[in-house]
View 1: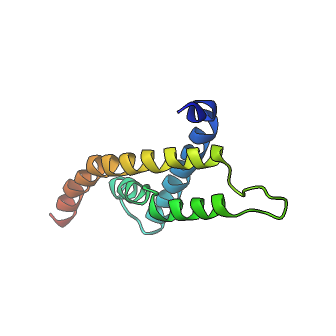
View 2: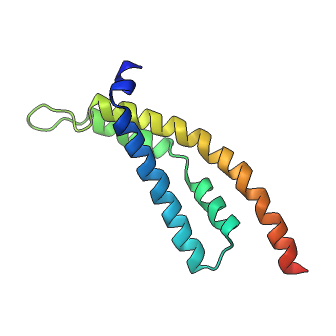
Amino acid sequence: MRGLIDNFGLAISILLALVIGKGLAAEIAGRAFKYSQSARTTIGSLTLPQVAATLAATLVGVKTVDPAGHHLIDDRVLNSVFVLMLSTSILGPVMTQFFAPRMLPERVERSA
């Protein structure tokens, strides 16, 4: 817990970079395919959770040592990745539950 408090800025930076990047990608792709705003935000929320591949890649980085004997990923980044995984695995489903139902009235309006 102390390591997280000491590296709060790093953890928030990584989390914000992921959320902004995923949101931007969903917005660009959604506009390219002419999706509604609700559909674009739902796409962003569905792609947000980062768990399995993120954990695997991080653990490989932690176990990998360069010729000088330094780990490629240190404990600060490892703790920040744990915060990222926990945050996105909660935030993604909550956002999806909030935004996905908003797509239904739009679909009904278009078909009418």
